[in-house]
Amino acid sequence: MRCLRSSLPILALAALAGAPANAQSPLLYVRHKSPRVVRQPPIPTLPQPASLTAEQKLAIAPVRWPAVWPAPQVPPGRVLMVPPQPNWLPQPGEYWGPFTDDTGAWGFEVGPMPAAPTDAAPTLPVPRRVSLGRSRFGAVALPPAPPPPPRMPVAGPVSPDGRMVVTYPDGNQVTWQFPMVEYRGAFGGLGPDEAFQLIDLYGRRGRITFATNVRITVNGQTTDPSHLPAGAHALARALRLTPTEISVLDLTR
Image (cartoon, rainbow, N blue to C red):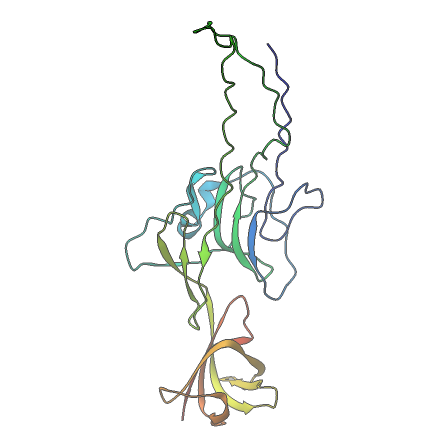
C-alpha cells in the first residue's frame, strides 16, 4: 500500500551576521546587538575543523540536534575566552556559540534542520483476525511525534570585567570571558554628557563614554562619576566589541 508523504522543507542556515537573501524561514539564533561595522561574509561551505582554535572547538558542541545542547566539558572554575566565529556557517543541526563576529555582535546559533510536516499523512485501517465477533480492524498506529525544537543556552549579564555565566540546556554552567582592551593615561575631566577625554602616555586624546555597568574607583575606593579628579592617572578597560565604552575605570591621584 502507498501513503502520501509531505515534503520536508529545510530551514535556512542561521548565521551570526544575518540570513542570506534567499533564506526561506526565520533564523534560529540569539544575537546580541552592538555597533555595526564593515564585515566580510562567512564562507558558506568548505568547513575546515582542523583550523579551529581550542576555544572555537569548545564553543561547538560535540552533539547535534535533536540531542540536548551540553555545556563544554572543562575543569570547575575554568574561564573560557569567547572566540571569533569560524569562517564558515554551521552545518546541519550543529550547536554553535558563544562566538563574536566582525559586526561587533555575539551570540548562539543552530545549523539547519528539517521542518515538521505541515500535513499529516493519511492513515488506513490495518486488517487483523476476527476476535469475539468484534471489528475486523484494529487501531491505527499514530506517526511518531516530531523531536522538540532546539533549546538555546541562557547567558547571564556581562560583568564590568567582561565575564558572563552561561546556563546550558543540560543544566550545567560555564563562565565565558569577552576580550578586553586597556587604556592608560590621564583623566581629562567629565563633560556634561558624562563623556570624558582620556589623554594617553603619548599625549593623544580620545573621547570616551561610560558603559551602563561601569565600575569606577578612586585610589581603590568605589565612587560615582560626580567625584572624579581631573588629571588623575587612569587605567581604563572596555570590551573589544565596544572599545569606546569604558566598563572599568581606576583612577589614582
